[in-house]
Length: 214
Figure (cartoon, rainbow, N blue to C red):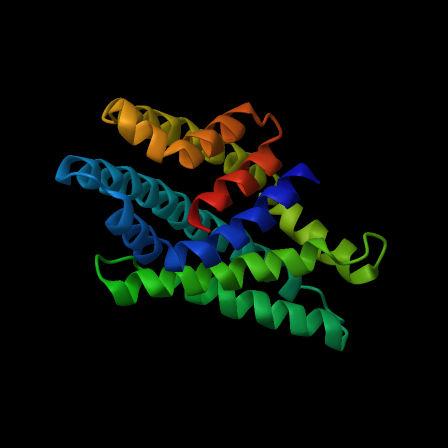
């Protein structure tokens, strides 16, 4: 359940991520007191976006392998009802599209990354919300588990923890550039980070991280 909550929180983070950079720039434009502060803020956000991008790129690459291999196993079932076939078709479409995606350094490619992440996260969210005792859920779970879904979820947790670690390092460097007066002006941001650091539940911590982009 904890891994499921983290996966859903990640999907929520995606939506904010697509609008985050302009939002941050608007705020920094209103609050910065010097070019040095502006550069420090931009470096923090660029570093954060880079880490998020690496996480999502990994999720697409490894997640598509799990899904596509599960589809192969599901296709071997001799008799499939309409609901199972619809899910197989959806998994196949999303898995194939994601596996063929190559991230490039342009806005169109980044937008595609976000679109595929939303599609993938929504699909897995729908799977997790299926009744555990339903025939469909049991069938899909067997195929996904046989093809590394549990390992994928565990690796996702580890990579999120690494994201938090790298963000804390970048945040510390940012705070070190602030003058006492600037720290007062940035008090809400610093208080948010204190609450973020104090949170020990990984799922809630990821949700807290999402607030950075609101």
